[in-house]
Length: 123
Image 1: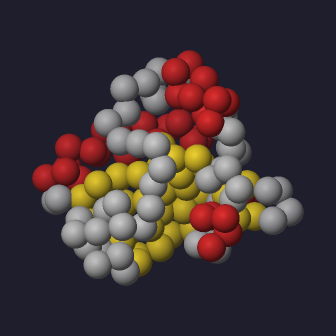
Image 2: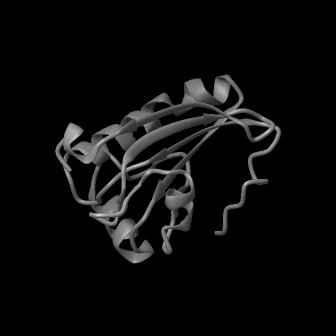
């Protein structure tokens, strides 16, 4: 599946990134987005997770972790790290995305950003 900036036009979007697969903190946060998904849908908002790693590894992680199986939203892979870099959430020293959440309005304008350094939580 390829995702573009026009795929979510006309709807609110909650987009989030995380630093590393197979960690303790990341699946907990991603699972929380899954639990809150019905509330997002009630507000006419979509949810999209974006990771910077390899699709096969991410799929294995998603299938192996009970907090991630059955998530009701897509998780996209930023294989070239161009997307996370353009958003300003790529830690160039570590080569991973920072833990970030964006709220994007129906016109595609970012209305809120929350970004945490890598050392804010265990990664």
